Each structure stands twice: as C-alpha cells, then as structure tokens.
Length: 287
Figure 1 (tube, rainbow, N blue to C red):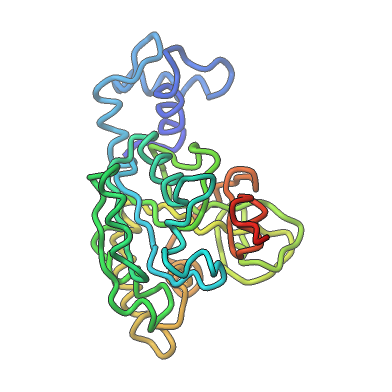
Figure 2 (tube, helix red, strand yellow; figure 1 turned 120 degrees about the vertical axis):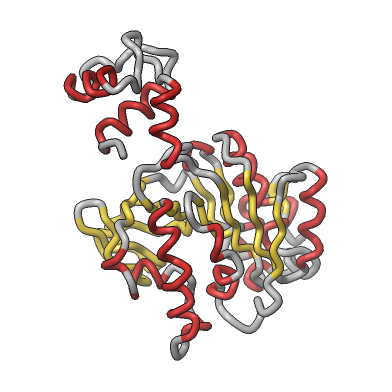
C-alpha cells in the first residue's frame, strides 16, 4: 500500500507528459517514488508505479435507474427518466460517455420502470450489463442497490438522471471512498454534514454543508462492507422505504471514511421537474 502523498504524486505524474511538478509536492515524496522504482528520474510512472496504483483504479460505474421519474411527466410517460433526451441525447449517456473517457469501461445499469427501453443503449454501448429490479415500484431505491451487492468495490454508484457537464467528476484513481458535493451556506435539499472534509451525516436541509449529488465512489475495502450493511438496513423495520445511501452515510457511518469531493453546480445538472427540463431544453416547452 502506498501513502496518500505517494498516491497523489503518482496520479499527478500520470496526468502529465513527464516531469515532477515544481513546488507542488514535498521533495521527500518524489525521492520515495524514485527509491521504490515507482517513477523515473524524468517524472514518468513506471510499470511498478502503475501496479501500485491498480488497487485504487475505478473499475465500474453502477447506475440506479429503476425509478418512475413521476415528477418529470409527461416526458416520462413512455420513457424512463434516464433516457429522456436533452438536446437530442439521453441524460444517462452524458455520464456513460464521461466514464468511458476516463477509462472506466464496465457499466452496470439497474433498471425497472419501462426497463426494456434501456436495450437501445446496447447498440452504442455493447459492454453495458443490464440488471432488472422486479420490485422497483414497491420500495425506495435501496432495492436497486440490493441487486448489485457483488459490484460495489472500486465502483462509482450514482443516480442515472444526472446530466454530467464536466467529465472530470469521474477520476481514474481514488484513494478513499468519496461523494460529490457543492459547498453551500444553506440548502433545503439533501446535503452532507462533514468534519474536516469527511462525511458524518446525510440530512435534508442544512447550513454550512455540502449540497449532495448522489455520485459515490467506493474503495475495495468499503465495497466489501456494504453488502452486509445494506442487507441489515433492508431487513430492518422500514428499511425498504429508505434511500440506499442512508446506510453508509448515517446508520453505519462510523465504519466508513467517506471524503467530500467538492464540485460546482456547473459540473452537474440535476433535473427534478418537467419545468426544469423545459427550461433546459426548449423542445419540451408546452405551447
């Protein structure tokens, strides 16, 4: 296992054409990489360096896409919300394309409402694995998470109705589990209360917090914990009515280290209502 400082420098070197960033990292970190054969003198990652980074590589994106999308009607009367087109392109494709651009090639979609509609994606993305949630309309989205318990490690897990404007929200390598959030003074939406950049609680409405975008990354270790914890929540009284992320963010928060990855409202567009959809794409304006 490499240190956080070594990880950060290796990732920085991977993103450049070579050369150690001047004044950005402690000189002893560069010395450690050289001594351990993880980088070359001219600042390139060696095969051993990439082997050291491999445990931190994002391997898949899991989309929870089973919901009814009722607040977006009439746009969702005949098509599931993730496949609603914005400027001619299904919402979910913005995230799929961004993930592929970052070298994350395994795509898993949990479908429910009008599930067969997702077959159309296979024409352009043959690598997609489609998982059916037969009880999507009887529970909250925790039942969709229950369908993919074996794939949480090294995975992004996200809602499928987020329009991704900045592909860099997906990282090829992640040292710790994390979630996306925008720092705000106050919000009535779902937000994360944190301490020193680490998530402590997920609440609806708060001050001096982070507006939550439901895009999480789970490390190998945390991905192995999640199945048992989700089963515990799902089987508890009222558990089937919970959002899936309440499990690691609240109920078992003391067993996870979930960092806040800050982003901006410009990076991601959340489309909750038909009015917001029509404001984004004039094709939906009702004359």
